[in-house]
Length: 169
Image 1: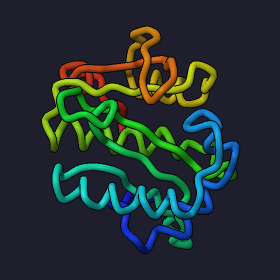
Image 2: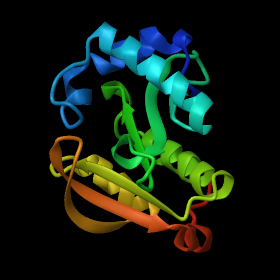
Image 3: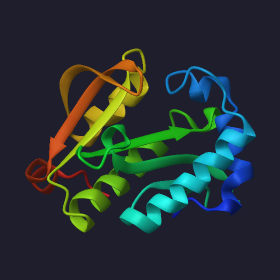
C-alpha cells in the first residue's frame, strides 16, 4: 500500500468506497453521493495547498486501486484545534492491517514532518475497530466529547510519547 495526496484521479475509487453503507456507518451514518465525494476532493486539494497536509488515498500497489483514505487535519476542521488523524477503508479491506499501517505513516508525518505537539483521533463510540487501531498506535483514551455532530470517543498522544514508543514500520 502507498499513500497519495487525494486528487481528481481518485474520484472513482473514493466514490465507490464512500457509497458503501458499512464504511460510512460510523462517519455520517449514510452513504455519500458522488457529488459529495467531488466536493470533498475539491476541499481536500485546497487544504493541501493551504496547509501542506490533508487527506491521502490509500492505494493498492498491485492494481493501483483506492482501498481507503486517511487524513491529518485540524480537529473539527478548525485551525485553532490540534491535529487529528483519521481513516476509512473499503469494507473488503477491513481486518487486514491496512488501517494500522496507514495510521503509522500518517502519525509519523504529523510528528516528524509537521512537528505536531499532539495528535488526536475521534470515533463513534461503537466503532471498536477504529478504537483498536488508535490504541495500537499508542494513543490513550481521553473520554467522550462532542465532535462532528455526535458524541465521540477521543484518543490522543503527544510527540514525546510517539518519539519514545513509535511503532516499528
